[in-house]
Image 1 (cartoon, rainbow, N blue to C red):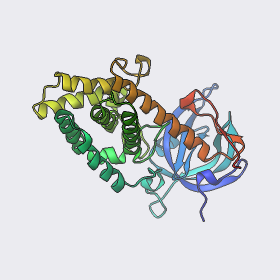
Image 2: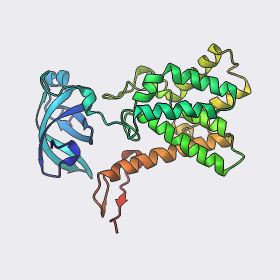
Image 3: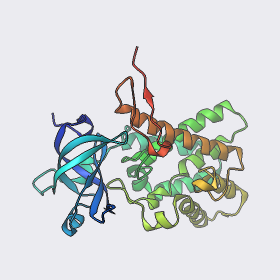
Image 4: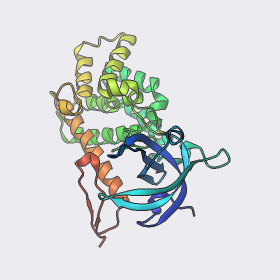
Length: 315
């Protein structure tokens, strides 16, 4: 059985085909160019630096390309990395399809589609229902293919729909516990809250931020999309029905520091922000612990202030 990235231990040499998920040109303190790389296969990711890079190297080793990587696994500042010994592009006769190296959601696209097809029937408000259906249809392929982020949480193919479904399930459970929560509004907001990432991000392979993603961000993007959808459906985007839905979307990051133009000012908005944050943190910690031995701490998680998490021994 061919080893994957996650199978190699410290000081073990590796030689395998991997995808370059990210490649950035950097300069050392002495003024020498190098490439900061993130390699990926279905098992996970690992970082590495390609020192003394030439102009040809920068042209060849770009995000989205498959390479044959030779190196040795090491640990740097508590995180795994590979010491690159040699690297070349995969040829056409070799396994060079980038999609063969992307991590996928643990639920099939068919299951995800069926789940959302049923969920829209639980949105009782006709305005919210029509807008949700319109936008899910408009971005159907991207919604079920795209990751939920470039890195950190749900950064895998199908991660956007998987993350969204997780939040909807949590939202329904919370709404059953607290009768004063408008479940229909919460479901609509949960389904749409990250849909702007279909424009913010480039796709599941070597995910990058688009120009719109860098200059606008998914919160501004989804608000614009809801307004355009409402206008196409002859719904007043400034009527209370749409304004409260839009409020859930623009406030779901909680505070301005994290990208929300307004903080939550409705109960459902507070719930949506809290569930979004909860699901993201659970996924980040779970992903780190998946590759952690029992009785040890995980590698540091950048998205959680560099904390490491302990995996207890099974009794």
